[in-house]
Amino acid sequence: MLFSLALTVISASAANPPKQLGAFLEKNKSVRGEVVQLDVPAEFRKFELVLRKAKQKDPKWFKEHVAKSGKNSTIPKYDKKLGISKSEYNKYIKIWDKRKYKKVEKGDVQLMLTEDSDKNWIINVSGKGMPISLIKYIPGKDVFKSSNGIMKRIEDINSPADSIYRAWKGYEWRYFKESPLLKVKENIAIGRTADTRYGILIYSLQEVTSEGTPLADRLMIVRFVPKKLK
Image (cartoon, rainbow, N blue to C red; front, side, top):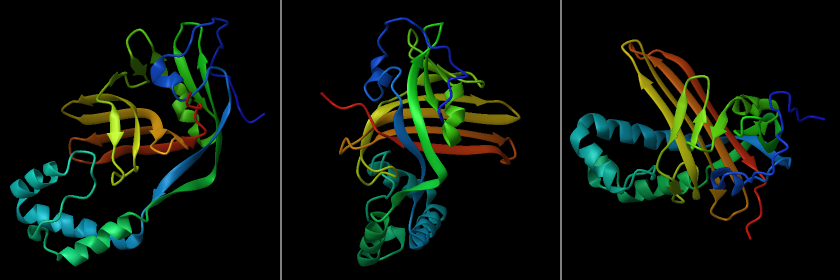
């Protein structure tokens, strides 16, 4: 059996999962999933260069302009100060719309939501998603606990179709710590795509030194068969 519960003790309790997790996964039920990565057409990198140049030319204006598009939008609204024509801008919009998820090699996984003996909840993920299984959700505090510390609940996800992960809604938690030597940011998010076809589980970890040297840069995206909506 591919799925291992070696890291989890399944509780005999009849407790129901917290809604933040139970809306997408059923307790003790294994579901299919896959670890994926976002595949963006190479030509879109030219637009990223356009944005970088616009930011360098007028940082204050660029920051204000990007804010007008909303924090979840990847592409700012058109303005001639971006340094390209409207037709060129529209071309990049079409290229961006061609992005898609691609399963990584040996990316098939199984997911199972379980409760441990301390009444905490674990999203067990097999194979390449195993690191997520080391994180525990503490229902009484609505937080996730990892080896780094406590990830606190932040604003709910309500991303539009043009956002990097396309349209989806869900919940997110974050840990952030900055010291004179190191900056650490850790996130976990779970939700459902707008078409309700997929569940989405995202885990990320970034560690950067005060000089800007990256020590860790991990991003894991798991698509899975979500709990059916009633």
